[in-house]
Length: 172
Ligand SMILES: Cc1cc2nc3c(=O)[nH]c(=O)nc-3n(C[C@H](O)[C@H](O)[C@H](O)COP(=O)(O)O)c2cc1C
Image (cartoon, rainbow, N blue to C red; front, side, top):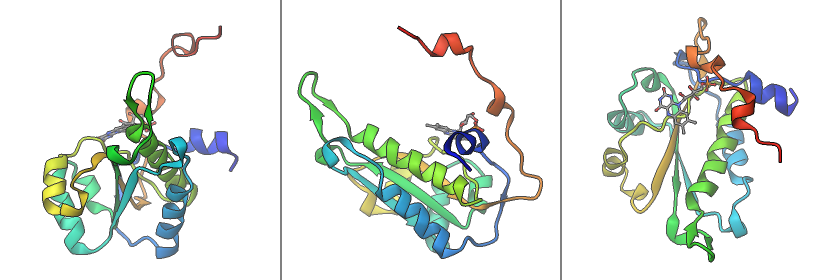
C-alpha cells in the first residue's frame, strides 16, 4: 500500500481479537520506532513492550478501556525531557515532539502489518509508573494495544468526521 492509502486506511480499532501476535511483527514495530527522526538525533524516548500476562495485567489498572485489555501486547512510549534538544530562542523542549513522531511510526507500522490499534492517551501515568518503576522520569505520551482485528471490527463514528479543509490548511 502506498503511504497515502496506508494513512487513509488506518483507523482506531476498538474491537480486538485476543489471539497472539507473532513476535516478528512486534519486532518490526520496534524497528519502525527506532528509525523515527528526532531533533538533533537526541533520541530522548523510551519504548516499553508489554507482552507477559503479569505486565499486561498490571498495565490494565492504568486505563478505563476494556477493549484494550484484550490485546496480547501493549506498547507504551515515553519522552525523556532531560535528554532532548531545547530550542534556544524560546527554551522549548522537544522531547514530546520526538516521542510523538516515534508513536506515529508505531501507529502506522501496526496498520502496515495488518494489525490494529488505537492511540490511547487517556491512561493514568502515575498508576503506570507505580506498576513499572522503570518508567519513572518519563513523560508517558502514548499507549498502543497491538492486536488482530475482531471479525466485526469497523471504524468508530469519529473516523470520518473532518473539519473543512479551508479551516485546517492555510495556503500563503
Ligand atoms: C493523542 C491521541 C490520544 C487519543 N486517546 C484516545 C483514548 O484515550 N481513547 C480512545 O478510545 N481513543 C483515543 N484516541 C483516538 C482518537 O479518538 C481517534 O484517533 C479519532 O477519533 C479519529 O478516529 P480514527 O483514529 O478512527 O481516524 C486518541 C488519538 C490521539 C491522536
